[in-house]
Image (cartoon, rainbow, N blue to C red; front, side, top):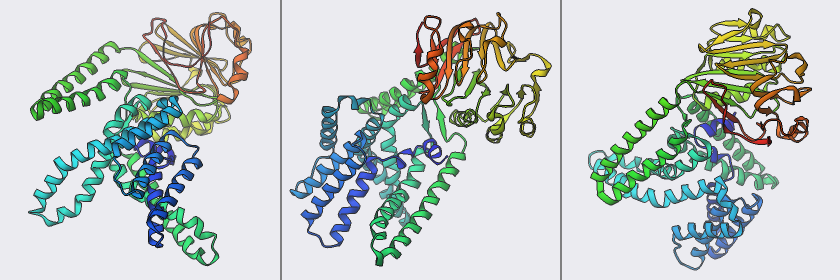
Length: 519
């Protein structure tokens, strides 16, 4: 939960080993050595050794290498009495990394690290000199206390400078952006530095018997600061629209392009050019969104989440969302996270075909996060009492026959199997450890077959355009052997979620997929 909250508000780098930690630890070590009256050159040499040791400790990850090389250049420059150029240091570090490992250019950690550092080195001085300094100088003439806020303004500007160039990388890599990331970083980066310094100092002190009291005090302080960080993360995550999910792929290209277009207009034509390019960028974005909504009208988005050996299916159409859960409780956990990532606060329906599945026992976690307008369940099972206690606006059961939703959609339950018809497109979802003998010949014909955990017995009897195996990466290699070769393509959710689009005309288009069995 903590890791998820930090990711949503855009401060996951505080939990991962990053360049920030290299810089903090190297400077803290140097400050301690100088305080102990160690000669400066010797202190710088020891700090260099500490940086190399930390890089080795983290396995020489690309993002750590980038920060480590820059720190070494900075420290070496101080040793020989020369001021290193930050941009040249950044370029040299990336050059060394890519020479040693050309595939590092695909490492998203390195891309984020490089982009953030570049933004701090280039964009931050521009913001500071053109906006913060003139503003604080002008305001401090009237209000003396404004000068005290200058450091806070600078911290916010540093966060903003790091966020702007990383925005395209985040959009391409994760498909979502955190709106409150600058505020979260402002509130949490400095306390994180305190935790790091305190814990790193406390560990060696604890092994010195007379100084264990100091170590205990450092650990106690670090604990309370960490509690503050967790509380702030929980509070910021609870805010509406803390993170925006960019579903439209074209926006991932248009938004960074718009920023670049505006900056180009500012560079070539001054402020007047920036206003013109900003206006045209807004018009282009609005036109793109309008065109996309027209083209995607009445298209159903089917997402099968990476939920281990369980099936967690999200159906979306024209702003409406539905959830189908089959298998163990991992289906619930991943559904909750995905719905929160998409900022979905209410779902039209929640389908639980089998009340003996463990997901039925954990469904209260989902209903506590989002509002369920209609709960649809199968026959009575051992978790019927738990399901009866769930918060839902309405309740339906397949004991009453097929259930219609969204005007042209129908869900039918048959011997543990779930059949969903989206107009003319047929979906067939299997229960865990099932057999195709429970289906009639007509029911075995479908457009999309979804298998929960493992293929059913006699899986070759199913005729489909494509299939998706929802299983964990540990069991994938064993389960794919049961599928016959040359029948239809099979995709899996072991590595990432699978997204399919349909217009309800018997068509299925895979948007995100991982093919394991080809035709």
